[in-house]
Image (cartoon, rainbow, N blue to C red; front, side, top):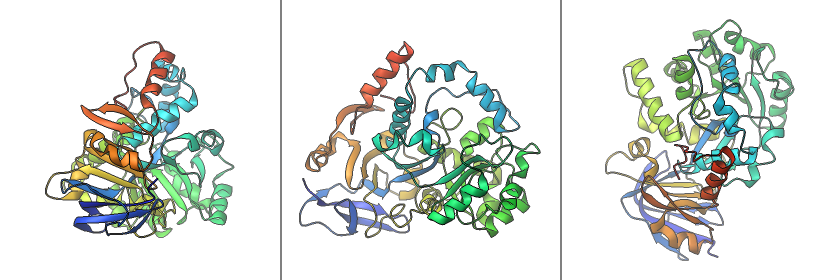
Length: 405
């Protein structure tokens, strides 16, 4: 097996800078430098663009199913949750095992360029599955479901969970102000009262944030995850993201689950750009959006020493897309599933166009053949077999548009 190689003659977006006609060398799963390897070099070609693999900072993998559920507009997330759990879709979903649902969510992310996900659920639920998935699911975090009386009582309370996060130098993650009723709007005050708003805190949704809330979030250097697809679907509004940016808050974009959000991270970032334009009558910069799915979530989840950018000694988590001439950042924002050309996790190819089959073979990566959006692809594991199980479980030919196999 080859443990050192390079990918060359392509555009590299680190994402801090753009390198044209460049190379990147990987050794034992880590980035070494931007040179050609003397051991093995793969000429990719100048029609391809290399990025850090995408980080999805907010997903509910156990909610990976379709179609969407809801009869909004809702005042907070709780009545939506009632609608979800009483729906035929929920009943159908639960004919599959939890591990099958987790696999669905993992492949949904993988084929859209994601190698790292934060799954917002207690460790006692996902710990049994995450090491068996084809992608990386972040393991080190503490959490609360939400800072409100509606909280589903995940964890031991915001104060204790936040203290644990500080003690272990890991993030404390919680939904916040996912609604605009009186109780939801107390979210930031609840965190402050429990001394749980800090640089370790990762806040999700925030559609009820006031100007005072935004100032507190910025002052405490907390991080924010924006899920506009889910927000607009459930509430017909989303967070004051421009104001958060202007306050200097570190912002990332996540998908939530396809039960309420966009189909995948690629759809989510395009929707984010569209919503931002409608809200502020100006364009959200494509380079900024790329950082919201790479370096920003790496910082929020305290893994920036390993993930989020292409730098020496960082993990060889790579995404190559087929792009058009022009702005490379825009090529990623406008990419479809068919444009995802190669994905590596720690230097190992997991998914890509069949024209790169020699890379899979040389690096001893197991794969099967599938077709996505008319393109012949290679993929680690067996998502075709997974979909066959799903269809057998539910009793008909189930189609999942975020996993079109």
